[in-house]
Image (cartoon, rainbow over all chains, first blue to last red; front, top):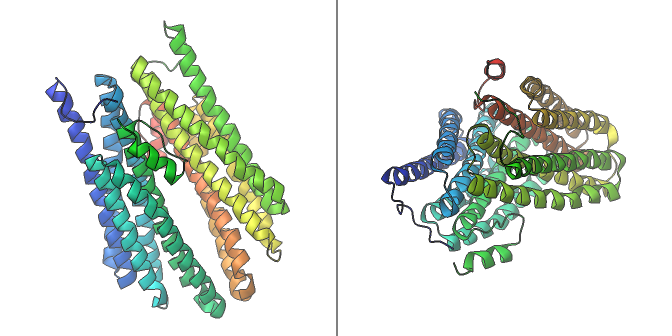
Length: 239
Length: 239
């Protein structure tokens, strides 16, 4: 398989276009990372202003998605890329869909935080949400880092974290159900906390998707819907 | 803007490739439609066998996603399509991501149905789930129909239905919360019903996304993250 280097085109303009769109993906990634951090902190600290920030930043994320998609279409039409360049463009089109949905989930946590702030505080589970939030944020950051560095080993490592996220999420859900059964007045706020945990769990799924695109991009192998073992095998295959 | 006709290429082979991939999308759509119908019926009728069918059909849906994606990449590399053809390929790549996630949600409903069948029956809310399920299934079917016929008017009509789905979902959630507060023993099964309603609500979101791609495909205008009014304006814009 051809080597995955950017900046190897005779056309300087084409190099610049690919580099530009790749940088925009990382900018979009940075924005959704901040959205996750803000939304979780808003919920845990009952900070309405931060919740509003997480919510309003979704507009920027959406605008970037549309702009990057448009640039990708133009590159496909004008440059008619093949091989690794084509995979880069396809991987970007898919990655930004997941980033946009991560932004949506963070926005949801922002709304849940505002909703919760109107109810009697039920902070018992906030430590678990904070812990899950940090874990999920690291996962997104590391997935974007794997994408930036085209690092398939890291992509596999990050994808593996998703199982831990799922376990943490299931633990929080079980605790919340017990809590709701003990005190039915806590049902409504507990559900908000449960939706927030669910949103974080889904962010983990999207981060895992991004790891799969990195392997597709570098190795040319579609590893979606396969096991972690198959993913590792594809990642370690000689180029 | 150039007219959106398939079968206008000098290369018969290219025509055949586009037609083939388009047909596969519709096959995949038919599969996820059946998954929705089976999963909802499995839940409402407590039919474990049907739940297993909905779950196992997700493998077929996933395999189709991977196959169609591969064909799209090959068309991009070999045919280097432009204008309407390029938009068709990009719209297909996006549509199948949403179809795959619709399949995931239907699979989830299948699992919830199996989980629920082990608990004391709590059928009070099943009529509402059935009603929501039928509504969502119609929405998916009509979105796929708009895609098949490149019908932007229908795409707008279907996208509008999403608000009704959201209202129905919110109504079910409110009822379930009241029910859980009245009878804390019902919390666990009620949550399963709530997750099923949530899965159906999300299927509605994905169907709306497909409608947006139809407008992009036919009109060349990206209407994501805009209002229904802007979507209507784009759909009615003269070619």
